[in-house]
Image (cartoon, rainbow, N blue to C red; front, side, top):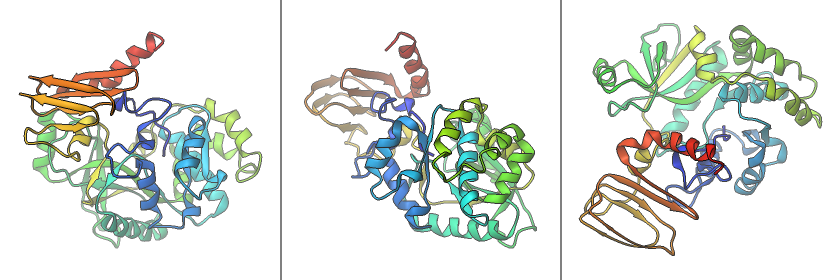
Length: 349
């Protein structure tokens, strides 16, 4: 899934160049390139499909060397993750009725790729024989209020006892509730990575999101033909804007979770990025420009390389410049950046 605009990382990430197409950690690969390479450990690269906005077709083509045009599924409008996954599932089911699918966001960080691969292969083995949907849950390391949580319970149904029955999904909690989740030991972060068999997920859509099922099922004769793009452009705008979590996972009774630890971060905020950046002795992350910093601590500072900058007496701020845009924001207020960008758009910026 690579269709997001990454507005929380403005001004580095903009609608014309979202964060999945950036080397935001300065490691020599963009986030989508890292994800593509990681998934190549699980299947041939020709089996990987990228669902993105039609405006990002060229970015995908240029950054993912060797993929074919028909591997890039272009959405004409943004409609959240449920239509995105439905489109891919119907197309892949048309190619292979017995296929196992993994759905992965294009902008997440996973540091232990071997462990990730092993866990996903176990999940593939489970969904190939059992009619279940498996999501990967991350063992929480802190009471984070920016993540959704999954509560699990014991189950004797599956042969793989590592995979637990989901009891409930909880949206982003307040800090007191997050602390209770950590103490209970049966709550996991929702990583947004899903594994299932193609026919099973289509049955779930038919049961829980019948309108979306009917829309995409009506294109059975068009998938993997020259008429597919015309069909999608015609029907996609009529899809409801709804997330996969809300539309499918929270309404299904065959949802299981694999509690996992493989160095995961969704890189959804500047704070999550900050934990992976190099710091100076005062806990400042500094990148770019000719920057002199005095009496300042715990800042993220990213400037254009040709910019000279002096910062004195600043603590706990995000300072990011990109071309004609500048962000100065307290770290504690970073969840509001998306709103700030919306305010800019409302003024025709």
